Length: 145
Length: 145
DNA sequence: TTAATTCCTATTAATTTGGTAGGATTAATA
DNA sequence: TATTAATCCTACCAAATTAATAGGAATTAA
Image 1: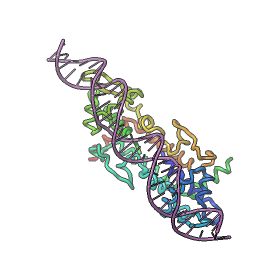
Image 2: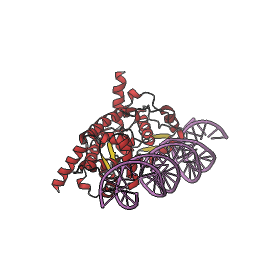
Image 3: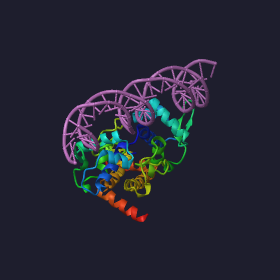
Image 4: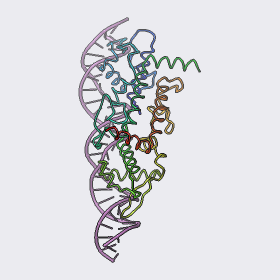
């Protein structure tokens, strides 16, 4: 499961990416539109800024905007930022590798092999899920209704 | 990430399935061979028995054995038992569905669609990962080394 | 000067995770 | 019948993580 942090972060990013006028978007607006607790969201966006995903403008009429093209921001990066490894086992993680301490031989572990295949598939999907891609999906889904 | 409970459970099950003689396997043996804390493993196997995955024999020379064919026990079931939903979002879970409270329209949510595709793939892999399948993988991997 | 915003630091309640402790009960065997 | 080796049962617990909240300082546009 994604943490709420990850979920809120992605929702906020999609909201910012989908905003038409070039004005930065305030935390208040996002919190209100997406039903996310204000102060909690504040800390999340701060972290996204720190990770150079967002940039901010201070003072009145300030807010947050993307610091990169929306097709260069994807779910894999955001989930790693807030939740750490995407893999099911630490021993198959690309970015957060750790041995399974109890495991005597990593190379002949069948469970590990399953986890590797799942990680490969999942990461591929999550990297494909850029903000642009998510907005396209939503446009499609809207048409259907 | 899998919890340690899930990981230990799967390791224990693979160990039991891989045991050649028909004797039941004691918690002590598994704990020792797989480097799992004894008392913790004890509670895990109790849960697996409760879920009718294992059966037990009490008293001296007792222990645990599979309650079903090893190709009818797979990782998806075990993970659901100990960790709950496999899906990234509660709103795409088959077995543990819940609304995302903050979400106004589930049907047009792009993130949800991504999560659905990932769940589909992951569940397929995990259902394919039966004890038999895992043992076959390990036999293959052993040959290679 | 005022209003609206980000920025910063600290705190916290609840839940989950990963165990541990101690003994009761059951059954095989010498 | 005593011994040994198992499962079974109940309770407890420490540490980490999660999901926030509180309160105000600094900044900027109008």
